Image (cartoon, rainbow, N blue to C red):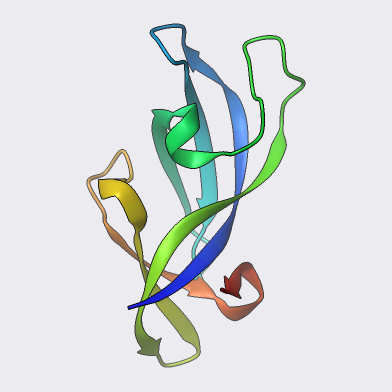
Length: 99
């Protein structure tokens, strides 16, 4: 598997339950917005807290699956999924960094 990171935006602090949860949006290759609500340490290495100033650009971990036409199909790392239950997203190439 090839590790990548994908561009996302932390929109708000979602929940105080330890260790803190954030709401993150990301746009797929077709311009649709997808939402993820997850624990801060799963999505970010940055010290994001309830008092942080949002929005915050993030790069979240994923695995390269395959090219899909002009987009990069990625699977989120650590079992992360969107609020709609998606694990795979087709991302625009400019929003993917290869590690």
